[in-house]
Image 1 (cartoon, one colour):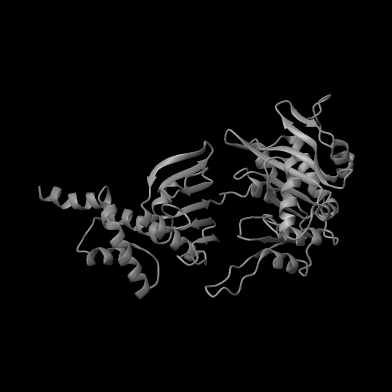
Image 2 (image 1 turned 60 degrees about the vertical axis):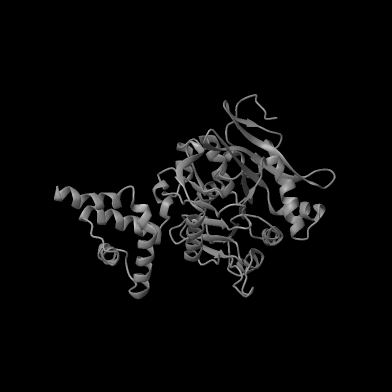
Length: 410
């Protein structure tokens, strides 16, 4: 009987009732870390438990140490959701938690209270070197663990904090690996490799979660090793497996509103770094003007990513971004026509990310920017589009991918 009584409290703490005591225990551990910096290990947790008047067995203490470590250094209540195949963790303002994996976006049983969501958001922002509080109620950061983090606090969100976490891939995929996963066929892989080999400037486009950064990184892996790649990003996300790659990351303003360095300034700086290829991780605003100017000064093979619903929507998207940089439609079309050539568009169907279309950018008779389909992926294979011959000419006949005979894309 005495053994049962001794085990019951420990079992309760290690199982269902642990959450009632976890918050206070986490605070004790944080105080202990301030007094004595170091690892979160069993001796530290044991000291904190003794301050609470608790004693646990070895197994329960090990489990508790792991949970405390998750709350202090990891994702806390979201840690158990970091399973293989998960690409995104999303916390909504009502506390519901969703994950995006091979099955698509779906809810989880995990639910965060407003205080839990806010505490987690502030802690993660701090670990990523960003400020997040009532004065600056949003943050975008790259965490030391490799996660990309974004959060918004009330009152900008009507309920609790909103968190968006993009998990890094466990393995840096190359084109062969993406082909084996069904992202594209062998014929499309040949075209993608030829785009890099021919030093054609290109954009990888698609909606959220379609794998734009993954494909761009895989394509840049094909760049010859004697070439220097300079990657400019707002938040570090593009993991390029190439021996001569350097990264530039923008910097937000400090609490006094000073010290900000935006993408526009970084693109200009990249020109002084002897780049062979300039890569803009994601075009979001007026920095498209500097990128186009850079690509028009002899820097071939530059590339980036842009959000767009279809390849045909890319011109309108670029026009909107160009307007933010002070370029009208005509000026943008003139810049793009000589700075960017190829659009590789991605889509997502039934959880699978695939290359749906390869298009060419050009000016129409009125001088406006247009995108014409060169190759489109279908169930029967690659179909030729109106710009297939132009793409083949730019890549060289030896690099032309086989298409479905007699089939032309609409």
